Image 1 (cartoon, rainbow, N blue to C red):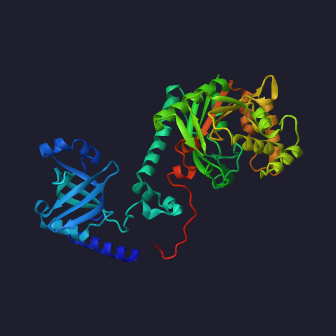
Image 2 (image 1 turned 60 degrees about the vertical axis):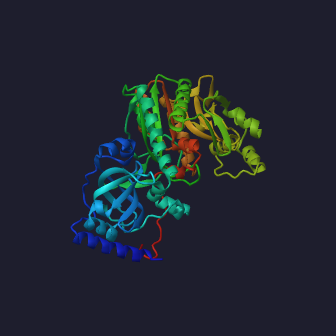
Image 3 (image 1 turned 180 degrees about the horizontal axis):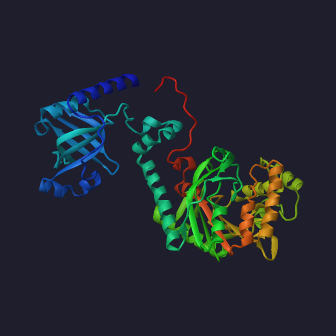
Length: 490
C-alpha cells in the first residue's frame, strides 16, 4: 500500500498534467446551474427533453471499464452516478480524466440525464473540468475514522462520511432557528451584548481571562449571554429582548460540559416567573415537535414526555425527602457528614456549594419533565425573593433526565438587596470560591435608576444534546481538541 507521501507526490504530478493540458487544478468559478437533488427530482422530464445540465461534486467510487467509466459525485444535497463514455466525451477529455482524476477530487460535469441498462439514474457528460484536485484520499467509509479523537479532530470528514452526523448538525441549526422564530413571534427583540467583560456577571462559573492591549486592561470572556446587559436594557424601555450566542467557562469536560457552547437568554418586562414557566413549556414542546418530530425521549437512562403534565418540585422538600437534610435548618458540618455517609465526593465547603451538592445528588432520580422551584436565596444571587419567605426565591429550573436544562426567575430589581447579595458573593470569592459570581457595581447603579418587574430565562445546547441523546461534545461542529503532535510532518 502506498504511503501518504507517495500518494501526495503522485497527485502533484497529475496537477502538472492538467496544467499541460490547459486545465486548472483549482479554478475560482464554476458553471453549475443546478444541484443534484433538483436534478434527480426532475430527472424524468430532463431525460425526456434531453436537457443539458451542469453539476458539481466530490468524486467517489471510480470504476473504469475500457472506453467507459462510472463514478459518483456528491454535492451536499445528494449523490448521482456519472456515466462517462469515450465516444460521447471525446478521446482527449476521456484520456485526461483517466490520467488525472482520483476519488476525493471535485469535478464539474455537463451533460444529459441518462438511465443505464441497469436502471440507474445517471448524468452522461459531454464535458468535464477539475474544480479541486485533492492531495489526500478521503477514507472509504466512516469506519476509516473509528478513533473518537481522530473523528472529532477531522470533523469535516466525519460529517462527509456519516449521514447521521450531518443530520445532527442540520437539526441543531433548526433547533436555534425554531427558538429564534418562537421568540420573535412573541415580540422579543434580538440583541447583541459584549462577549468581553470587566466582570463576569450573570452566572457562577470560572471564566477565561484575557488581556485588552489598547485599554491595558484584564478582561474576561463572558460566562452568560449578556444577562446583566439585557437587564440594563429593561431600564431603557425595551420590554422584551433575547440573545443567542457563545458562552465560555474555564471548567472541566464531561458528557454535559464543554468550555465553549451556545446559549439563549431572554428577558420579559412586567412578567413573573410563573408566566415564564408557561412560555418555557411551550418553547420546549415546540422544539421537540418541530426539530425531532416527537415529544417522548429516552436519554441518559431516563424516559420523559414533554407533552405530559410538568411536575412542580420544591427544592427544599426534594432534598429533604432524598437525603433527610432540611437545608433551612442545618449547618455545614451536618451536610458534610451526610455527604460522607452517602459516599458523595464534593468540592468546596461553603454553605452554597454544599447546598448545590445535595441537590445534584437528589436530581439524578428525577426524569421530568419538571419545574424545580423555591431555590434558597444563597444559591440564587440574582433572583427575587418570595414576599412571604425571604430565604427562598421566585426561580425555576427545568429538570429533564436527572439534570437542569433551563433556568428562569423573577429578576431581583431592588438595588439595595442586590448590593447585599453581591457583597456575599464577594466574600465567597475572597475565600477562594472561584465559581462565585463577580459583583457588578455598575449593574447596581442601573437598578438604582429603576428597572421594571422582569422575568429572565436561559437554556443552552445541553437541551439539544439531551433530546438527541448525545454527549455535548458530539453536537459541537468543531469541539476544542488538544493540538496533535506532528511526528512525520503530515
